[in-house]
Image (cartoon, rainbow, N blue to C red; front, side):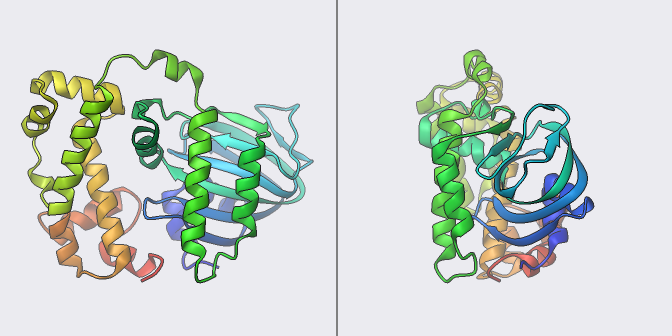
Length: 301
């Protein structure tokens, strides 16, 4: 069992809704440093509703599910081995009859967007998953079965879970994106320019200089005017340069807090926050509590 269900409920609305419906989380584990989590659920005779959770959810039925009905797809039925893909914009209501066990993988939007750009040279904005209630994908099912069969508390579990979850993300990106999003993804920065800009951002994060990053500096890397760069960046990434940098800065802070190797003030300084209180405020806005609370609840600390 994991340390704090409430901390996951703050970050993942689908998790919070299942808790509200009195489903039981049997075990949970983080998969890598980017904020994705696995949860093994038991559920029976209840109802649930999801509305624009803001994160992606992949669901894999381990046991039961034949009497589970999604009101948006009333003819579809679950069964062991069935999958559901619920993107960040997903909305649905469910009636659960009988008992079942299922595996959930919660993926932050930023993580999947970064994977799309780094692995496949896809526009990050194109990392929009197809909304699918009950489908079969042999490779995804095998990967999810391996995730479920792994001893999550084992000494080498972290590396194995991360590897398998990365394979899951690659399969989602190659086979389960919204076709219309790919068809309309026009304009934006070229792959080479995107890489230069992202490398510049990551280098600044590594030096602790993210706070000093300016639109002018990033535009210079892209060899564009500030106005044109800002428009092209948002066309490619679906968010402004500032929003992307802030998200990456917070992600790096979470990684450093979770490692436990640096003091809280030093983490704030290295990630470009003026004070520890500024870092804690950013964490609270993301539903993660203060820096000290996040460190206390983070796996491995």
